[in-house]
Amino acid sequence: MNIAYLGPNGTFTHEAVSQAFPHAILTPAPTIQMALEWAESAKVDAAFVPLENTLEGTVSMTIDYLFHHSTMTIQAEYTLPIAQHFLLSKKTVQNNTPIVKVVSHSHALAQCHSFLHKEHASAEWIPMSSTAAAAAYVKENEDQPFAAIANKKAAEEYDLVLATENIHDVERNHTRFVLVSHETMTLFENKKKKTTIMVTLPEDRPGGLHSVLSAFAWRKLNLSKIESRPLKTRLGQYFFMIDIEEDWSSLLLRGSVEELEALGCEVKVVGSYHATYLEG
Image 1 (cartoon, one colour):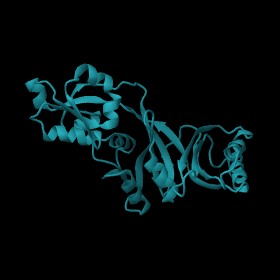
Image 2 (cartoon, rainbow, N blue to C red):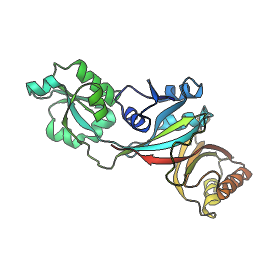
Image 3 (cartoon, rainbow, N blue to C red):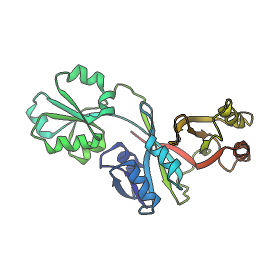
Image 4 (cartoon, one colour):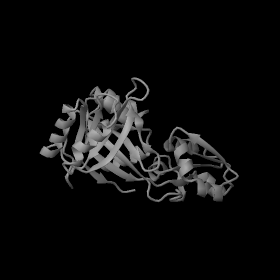
């Protein structure tokens, strides 16, 4: 199977997809949208993309593409613990010179603020397009006393030294990734499936969202997530992404969707799938 993922090599997406699919052909894409477009047009078999992070919230590019442009469905969900490490070139370690520049993605720099303030307050902190790009930059400038904040996969990819491990401020930081494809796949079976739907209300009226939630509440269906996103038609118009802890084959869930459609809602089923955890 050929899987497109958000590259370059050494990103957290690369780390996650490598664990989840060690024998697949992995094709890096420069953006989330391009990875999804390649899968949508069948240039690859599937796309592996981030959906949500504990600290930064939902990845809007993924949700918006699945709602507005895609006929693919989610086949599986993978949650990866996010651990940030302080990476140096081998020459910098040998020379033991003070670090003058720390590079990483802006989110990673923010997630490691306490460590940087305590250990490298005098260094320049420079944001880059990704943690992997930061690791590549340090490798390309290995004669300079620069450091990158990235993961272990990046250290392996760019032959850097793990100078200090686990420098992130928040311990329980995770990212949810999803595999999306036109092809129906059963990749693992561990627990009951959950189902993701996207709902557009018929009009902006008082109690509209309450009516949607009531369709699940009286059937005692548990919602693990609900989030609104702009419809991109006019100001104040939204669709709702809802995760339900129920298999799409459930008569109760199908009854809920039928009730929503009877209310005039548009409902898009984005997938019914299993979820699992990866090692950090």
